[in-house]
Image (cartoon, rainbow, N blue to C red; front, side, top):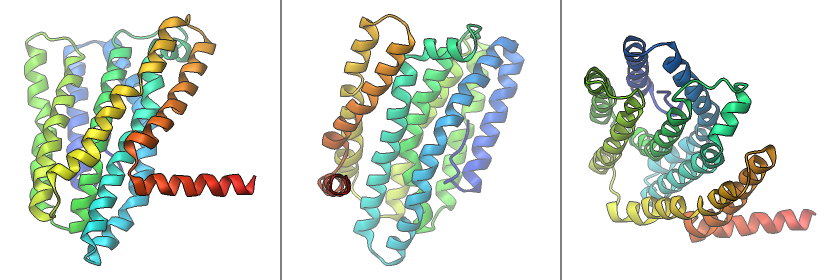
Length: 280
């Protein structure tokens, strides 16, 4: 599992240990075909992770500066905004890939797609989506500077995927269940991280739910509808891939404006659009 560059050395160590351990488990329990599928799926993740890294790089100095100036309300709003944008970026990029995964893999690999590749990729994309919500919390705690307990607890949760994965694989479960374990670990990690952040930085769980989790959930339920309908009505082709991709981006942009963005952020978008219109 790749860690975002916005995380510090403890996060990188925990995720490196997790990734290397899972590699060893896959090699022990499965053959080269399953490991090839896992490698392809992680290549897709690596291609997308850079976008969220860029968001982290852009927000981190502002988080640190606002907290250092005791502008705690601004720090909270930046964390919320970063959470929504990270989630939005991963979702928008993942949606057309997930819908057209079979066609994309067949094109990319010349029709020789290792078994499990599509399900591995979709599960990794889902795990990446969940992980995108945790990155801003890590950034906020780093801005506060009280990271020892947070990093210790996080590392234990992340590395716990190894013994759990070993147990289920030893019991004969399919290879994709390893990625289900990673998703469950991320689902546990999120509320624990929120709790630990609340210990060192005063913010409201209700505010986080209303301004981050609920908008992201509604956006995730609404946005895929039209792309999925188009996918189901058209035959497999370059044209369908292009249309699904374009519609996914356009519909996501519209849904994001009304569901994801706050009123202040909507105002900034309007100002930006007006500036573009005036230049044209």
